[in-house]
Length: 207
Length: 160
Image (cartoon, rainbow over all chains, first blue to last red; front, top):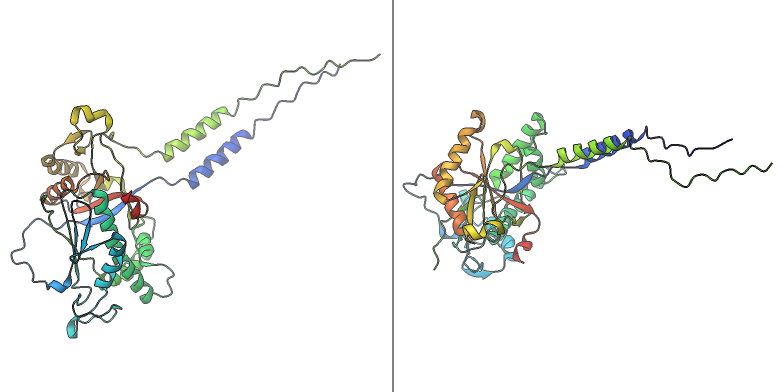
């Protein structure tokens, strides 16, 4: 009597398949890390005599309680903010000692002398929404990054990466010390060309 | 003699369950790895705003978190709908921020105490007033490195 039983499925390799999947997920999953805009607050001690800054070297951005944007005293859409900030920072209107050799701006004598002098002043209302404030911060940082990218590409034409990517690699803890030292040098040069001078005024009360 | 094979019995062979432990372990490992531990339960609404010019904030042991936003629906009855600050597991006032940061700083290892960053996880609909107050408090205790934690996304998403 050839009573055939259905053959049992061999489960021996199941564990291998399971491990294969496990390793696949291990490799492809990135643990979510928080990211955000880094800022440095000014220290508390009052400056005894604030340095004299000429009006033309200040780029004023005001956000009011209705989330409207006032850039250099005119109502502006947030889409134009980045372009205006780039134009201001890259103006290079100074002459003599204050001239800017690498700027590609309009060299308007009514705008900033050089990127080192140029200060962006951001002021918001207490009623401003946080998300609008972040959008403005984002655009201002973007303006700096745009210029730094340009200079980074000009100084290191064969690197094949932008300033932002270089900064990312630099701050990655997995990067080796040698690479870091190498990158730091290049990043610092660019940082010095376009220093981030973003001043925040204390917010105005509801007015 | 015609031998009639008894038709194979209709019931299917039992599926082997020998691999079940493997699958379970696999899932376990997966979740162990992919889960981000949150050490305090959120008591405020926390939809972060979007930004794309962001820098990563790794090394969790170097970060102090401060949450702010409207109390979540569970707490609205008790705490009202005004934006509040959450420090660890409880609501705090603006005045408590300084003491909280100092306490957190003191709890960290000595070599990390100078490189700490304060991450502000603030709901996108919060008004700037409370954030400015927090910033003033942080300046008072000299915790100057700040990170506005955001989602990664285009800034125009903030205007919907």
